[in-house]
Each structure stands twice: as C-alpha cells, then as structure tokens.
Image (tube, rainbow, N blue to C red):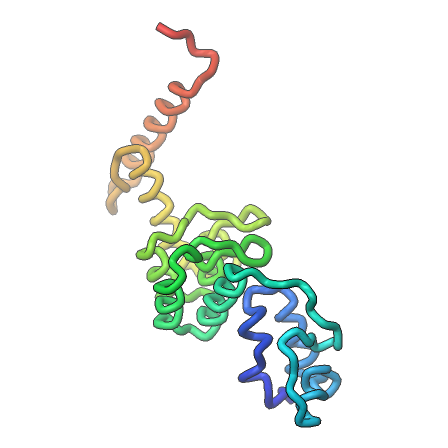
Amino acid sequence: MTCHHASNCPLYVQFAAEPALKAWRQHYCDNQFTTCARYKLSETGKPVPLTLLPNGQTLNRVRSTEEITVTAICNAITKGRVKMVNSILAGKPECLNARGPNGITPLIFAAAAGNLEIVQALLEKGADVHARNDAGHTAADAAAHKGHHECARVLREEMSQVAATAMGGTAPVDGDDEVGEEELRTGLLAMLAKLNPFRKSA
C-alpha cells in the first residue's frame, strides 16, 4: 500500500536527483509509510517542515540555488513534463549543464530516464553531450546502461557531430561512416602532432 501523500510530497521536488530518494520511496512511501516521520507529523494536522526527512532526521545543509534548480528540472523530467523543463531553463539558462548529486546533469538524468523528447530538447538548447558524472559516464552511457537504446543512439550521433565540428569537418552521413571516421582520425592525429611537446621547431 502506498502513502496517500506520495503524489504531492515535497521530497520529490527537493530530491528528484538524489540517490537516497529511491530508497526512501521503496522503504517508506511504498511500504512502511506509517513509520515515516513526515507522515506521522502530517496526520496530527501540524505543518511538516521541508527539512524533515522520513527517518526523523533534519536536513541541515543549505542547498544552493543551482542545486534547487537542477533538482526542479530533474523532477520535471521524472514526470515527463517537457514544457516545465523548458520553462525552468528559460528562467535559469545557466543551469542547462549544472551538476547535481553525483555529478548528474539534466541531460544525463533525462537519458537515464529514457525520455527522448526531453533529451532532444536539451540538446537543442546546447546541453553538453560530452559531460560526465562523477563515475565518468556520459548521457549516452547512462541511456545504454538503462536499456534506452534509441536515446543512446541519438546521443552518440550528437557526440560524433560535436567532435566532427570541433575538427572543422562535418559528421558522416548514412552510408559514409567509414569515410567520416577516417577524416576524424586524421584530424585528431594532426591536432596531436601540433601539441607534441617533443616536436622540433622549424
């Protein structure tokens, strides 16, 4: 049985990207919700502080504006609300590539959720497709790990496009993969040659 407060509990808004949220939900919201400190306090009719956690502890750390915004974006992604994501970023565009818990960016979170529409919307806004979380995983890695293969494909194509553009070329078109990879390889070798600290100057 699920807690009847689960659909509007502020914890989901505050901690959408927090790894702890899943554990809280499984233990309290979906099972032993009567032991949740927030539930017990709400049943008395008293206001429940945003800082009160399900286990009765109080959150003392002050969250930055950036963290709150990233969490709000992740909460919107969880609910599949594209318009809300766009609205939040319209007001806080600097949070497009902001990092939340464990180094998760909005793009990585959307990829892990398998929401292709939001992934594409974030890419159109200029989200960094090469950004990595604290574990060293990109959005494409996160999508593939969760089995969201279409998301992973779109993200890998974007990575190739960005890499090719950085080299001054264009991304390979269908049927031209081998040529595109060769051009990219040549460009990389040329760049490395220029950066070689042991190269003799002319």
